[in-house]
Image (tube, rainbow, N blue to C red; front, side):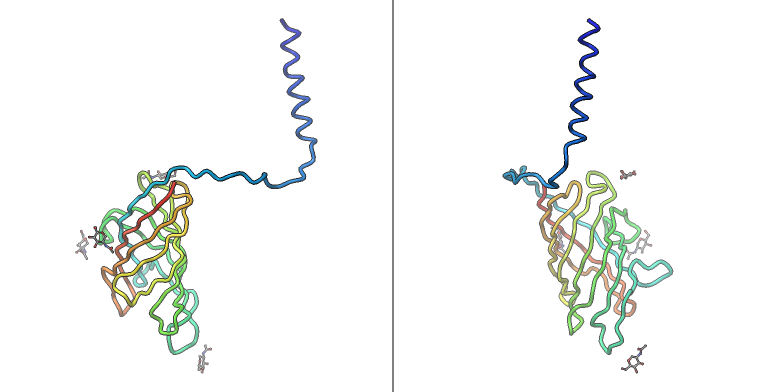
Length: 183
Ligand SMILES: *[C@@H]1O[C@H](CO)[C@@H](O)[C@H](O)[C@H]1NC(C)=O
Ligand SMILES: *[C@@H]1O[C@H](CO)[C@@H](O)[C@H](O)[C@H]1NC(C)=O
Ligand SMILES: *[C@@H]1O[C@H](CO)[C@@H](O)[C@H](O)[C@H]1NC(C)=O
Ligand SMILES: *[C@@H]1O[C@H](CO)[C@@H](O)[C@H](O)[C@H]1NC(C)=O
């Protein structure tokens, strides 16, 4: 029946025109109850390589105040994450961001970093770390405050242990055990 067939597009046209002409008075939805999906727990284990030395450092000073201590130094990083402690072992991601030597005694950092993974299940997903890092302690804990993609809405913590440190040039390798709760 050709008559009825031609009616359908006409109705769609009327509807879409009405929607297009409706003034948008509001930029948000009404409040809705939040129903969280079931949570998952994921453990991650890797090594971070923070390298100042060589021709291609993964950490660079971007601010260095003219003081007698290191207090106030800001470092930008793009540190590779590997599966084993050796830099030649498989790279599974990178940690990008900043840290600031933010204690008068220069023994604590404030860390603002996004750890993105580049392999397997979590390729393209990342965790956000915003935390103090008392580097003077051999073992320490950092807060995981969020994440992207598979780690959306993440919360958790990272246990850190210095695996290697060169106190002359600042190069370090740090072992990370991360517990992530996410959806
Ligand atoms: C650094 O501080 C010292 C002592 O206050 C001063 O003599 C020197 O000029 C400063 N250097 C720069 C680059 O500002
Ligand atoms: C890392 O691996 C390379 C090559 O496999 C080896 O020559 C080097 O000694 C290793 N380094 C460490 C610190 O284990
Ligand atoms: C990770 O994801 C990117 C972007 O989707 C893709 O180009 C790349 O091949 C993936 N890598 C692996 C190892 O799956
Ligand atoms: C990480 O977990 C492994 C296995 O349980 C353990 O051997 C290692 O000491 C832990 N490292 C840190 C930094 O907590």
